[in-house]
Image (tube, rainbow, N blue to C red; front, side, top):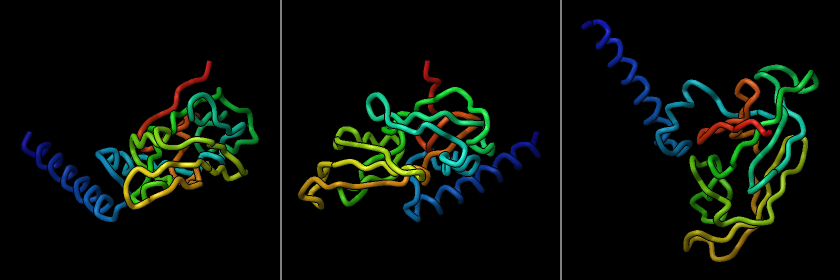
Length: 162
């Protein structure tokens, strides 16, 4: 039993160091950063097709199991609420990766374009740093992954579209 607790404590210490380094570097916010040690969320467009915005700013795509080229037979379409993944950064009106960012509270006229999908929106300022609304973009491959055929990000996992 003593060996188990020693090993468990060592693993927790390593995770805490990784979390502290990532959080200190300003790369990740919240406890979801610990999950990034296990799974990286990026490059979903390499194994997904029919990428589009749907509903109230959700991303939909038909994706294969992770690592399988998108040109092969596709799995069912999944949908990911981008509010779980994207917020407005410190500039106050720029899209950024943020767990439970709820960017749609401040942004409108959003669209996804390009083969390497880019989300572009017009966003109102959320603080005094930014004075006026701005058109801002974010490359979706930078924070959205394909986890066994399901869209995912640091803040959540997509659901099957019926």
